[in-house]
Image 1 (tube, one colour):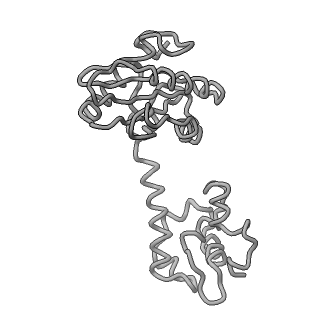
Image 2 (image 1 turned 90 degrees about the vertical axis):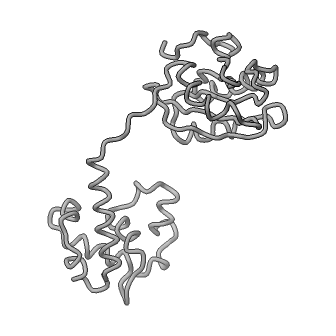
Image 3 (image 1 turned 30 degrees about the horizontal axis):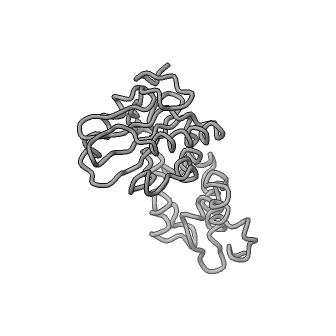
Length: 236
């Protein structure tokens, strides 16, 4: 049966889009790599024949030769190389250590990340750091450009990636092109609106830093964040 003949919810690409790549079976993952069928065989049929070559399961895939796969009617050089390339990538991922993540443990460490990037900008850039439970930065999100007073930051945009990436906490950062990092009333009002929204989502707003020309202000340290504990350190 051709893939297009299957109900949409059973097609590998549609399943992956709806439920994530992890919901696909071994055969479906291989079918995605094989991409197209051949003659009377669908890509799923070919994937099942590839799996049938392996007595001990997927662990054998990395030791196969291109000629092994090309022995299957319908698997040519391009399909065989695509399958083995995926296996090789998986093997390299397994033995490649992850780079240590940056630690956001204080307002100074966060300011140092952004000072040289933002101090000379002529527009206001509003960013966020997504933090995991260990205090590590897992993502830097570019939320808006243009300034808080002229284009208020919407909580939907501010927390969209934080929710998607399961961040435990978040730190907001924006610059003042004037060079003066003193928070405006709009800065404080917007920040505390985001604090309330974060509380409802279970994402703690640790701080909001305003970057100026060679200097910065931590709203947390200045006591401008509602319910904040104050201080430079986030590791309390």
